[in-house]
Image 1 (spheres, rainbow, N blue to C red):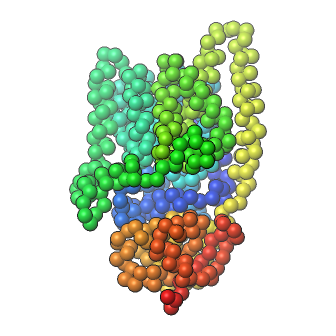
Image 2 (cartoon, helix red, strand yellow):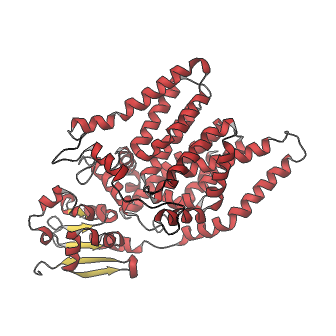
Length: 486
């Protein structure tokens, strides 16, 4: 079924540099990958264990090819090209898991296309998110746990693969109950104890590399004067602002989920309904449980729900929907007079339900031009407007950080705006405070944090625009800091 990758990859690659608008997380992970690839540590700032690093380590390994093929493109476009490898692997694993849960070739291909052609997946999988890496490894773990040969090393590898998923994005750990059920169904009763022991060994021994790294650096436990793994976990679990309750109108979570459903109502609503039905079909139960667990986490009141969370959910929704349709058709005898009409009716229903919305949103994804401002800002950085780039200090958002470095600005003097007031190492490097900054690249993400970062707010108050790209809320301005003021 590798030929199905052609439309899946083509829809993501076409116009990926123009849509969607870059997210600051994309630039952050790309810059962290740059730091890994250039031996600068795990991040381009003081690494504070906000996420495990395996996701951007993989991105660093993939980044050389698009950088070689697209040398004149902005850094985020190169990073998006690298993510096509992740998309290809994820789509193939959706097909593999579908086959190993007992679906026919046609049903497995349908699962792959439901996932691959989803407008929501096309948009979010173009972007550089750690969830893409985590989902790839989680699907690999499910495929290994369902291996028809039931070899012990397959189950050890399933544990290691799930550890790789957790070390790519820690939130994927909630899928562990579904994976354990998968292993229970995929292992032989006589050797099930060994299978679970092997799985646990592969999982625990691989995951332990992360806390061991923190322990060796003296950063496992909270303490004065340093970051810590456990301190960050405590912040992630209870210290960050929640998104509100999904079922309460007007909250961030409610608005976000409404947007997901409007983008692909078939996969979101249909997949959830199929998952409930799939709980009553033994071979579909692991996939259905995965959907239920992920949905329940999203529904928890007061929790933080990020935009990219649904990336983890989409392949399992596609598997649940295709699996439920396959089970429904399979309930009819193979030569039953209604079998072919039932298949035709299901296909027609899918086309009628999803077709118009998929075409409309697909056309937008293939033709929108939202990102010219980032291209123009990156070109300004490379155009030599700053006389001595090696000595200049510039504040950027995450997206333009690597473009500034590629233009010759020194990494230590290109400052990610979040770190102006949050990283003591950055504060120590600015002996005169805001007066040590020469330029600010004012982007939508950066302006959105202006009121939360005192130094950034001061920089805006003492600077003037020397170049502007675009207009309105999506514009990017090059601000020159007027150091004689105030």
